[in-house]
Image (cartoon, rainbow, N blue to C red; front, side):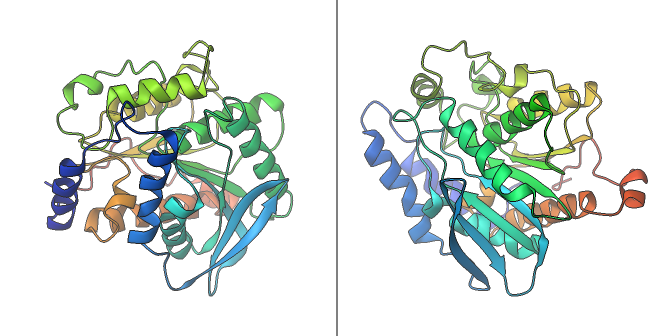
Length: 315
């Protein structure tokens, strides 16, 4: 059951409903989503610095004391169409705070002005600009479409034969642009944020004429062998629930260290929309521990310590 704080957030979002792609322009949707940045300022204990990563604007977020040899490249959500540094600065700042490392929040180009592969190219460039200077390595995280982009980045980096992220965290990831998961039907009434019409429109903006099963736009359909450790978080009220479940299952079948937490009664990217809820704080703590394990020594990694296949925080 959702906490009191989470339940209040869900009630509010039910009144607002998903962004109406038939009634709103792209610009107005972006403006509405950026209001998250007004509602939730970044953590006061963090320092935010504008940086350039191979020509891509980004923010470098640190806390007062942090391990500068470790970093997370964070890819924001928003269906590849909306979302920005402003909308995700608070979430990225809390991740930097709990993980005790540098977080780079990337301002990758958005569709429809910049369809695939612009976002992926930017993610690869941003990763490359950071990775060589980090002795302990660079990890990747993303929410919603940013989670799909993070997974696509893993596939692209593996296939290119270059350095891989140490680990990857996916928050409520959108991994299947065909929207074939059963949760689109079984959880449609429970999800106050995401609906099928919204995602179908964004697919046309981002993928344009590509086959929606193309692995670098729908990583669920890719060959997942050889990927670094992956950890997913998803709420049980999400229409994207099955994206996370199927991806983690397929990754495990391919031999990947892949784990997942399902948060009972929680909504899409609940870490962002209800930051004060105990579920959100628990989720950030679990992300910190996940990254911490995979920045550990070779002996620690070899010991097999990690999250279980399922670890439901509400049970």
